[in-house]
Each structure stands twice: as structure tokens, then as C-alpha cells.
Length: 160
Figure 1 (tube, helix red, strand yellow):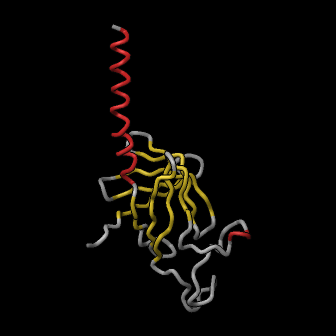
Figure 2 (cartoon, rainbow, N blue to C red):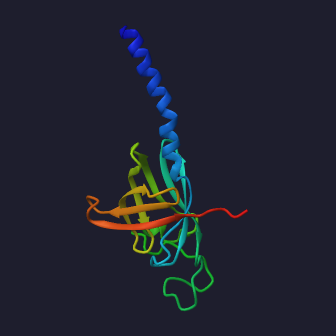
Figure 3 (tube, one colour):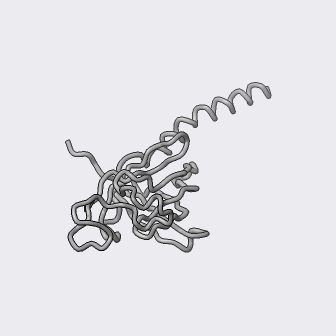
């Protein structure tokens, strides 16, 4: 009888694993950041990296410096001028990995990750939560999540 119960427990765990993986992948895709964010809107592509999730900037509303911008020459690609590491201050914003290390907790939240803010050169702890299929609440914080800021990102739907 114990063997039968153990066998059913193993079957139940194995059967539930694909459901968790499918839920975890619900954030995969391209997300539009808050359009009112300093520096303009960006699109971030969230992808799986092993059993974790990461995000890369794949589009910028203003990918190049505008005339009169003190951070760079007009018409040149925006770079990571605020990075605390001088060696990284010349890397382009477009294509930059800004989110990494997220783990799905099985309860609609991705946590244990970090998010980099190129506007101020700081990296924050971060967690994310889906609010429906096409709205992502992204919360960056220092220490614990009560001290932080939440942005609402929306899923970018491919046309055609």
C-alpha cells in the first residue's frame, strides 16, 4: 500500500511540473516600460536563462542623443553614462541586459532578481507580478519591498 501511495505521489509531482513551467513562462515576451519614465519608453524582452528569467532592452523611443543633450553628441547611440563602473560607461543602452536572476515562485510572482536603472546607474532588488495576461507590475527596491517603486509594464503585441 505504501508503494502505491508513493507511486501516486511521484506521478502527481511529475504531472504538475509542466503546469508550473508553463505558468513561469507567462512573462516571456516583449514588454513596454512606463511611457512616463525618465528617459522615455523602452521595450524589454524577457527570456528564460536556464531556470531563471532575464530582460534585455530591445527598443528605445529615443535610441540616440538629441541636439543639446549634455550626456552625448546628437545622433549618436545612447550609452550607459551613469554606470558606477567607468569601464561600462561606453556600452550602448540598446541591447543592454537590465534584469536578471528572476525565479518563479509558483504563486504568480517572480522574485530574487535585480533590475538596473540606466538613468541613475543603480541596481535594485526586484520582483514582478502579472496582473492579467498583458500587464506586469515591476517593483524595484532597496532592502525590502516596502521601500521601492512599482512600474506598470504592458505586453507588446506583434502586429500581423
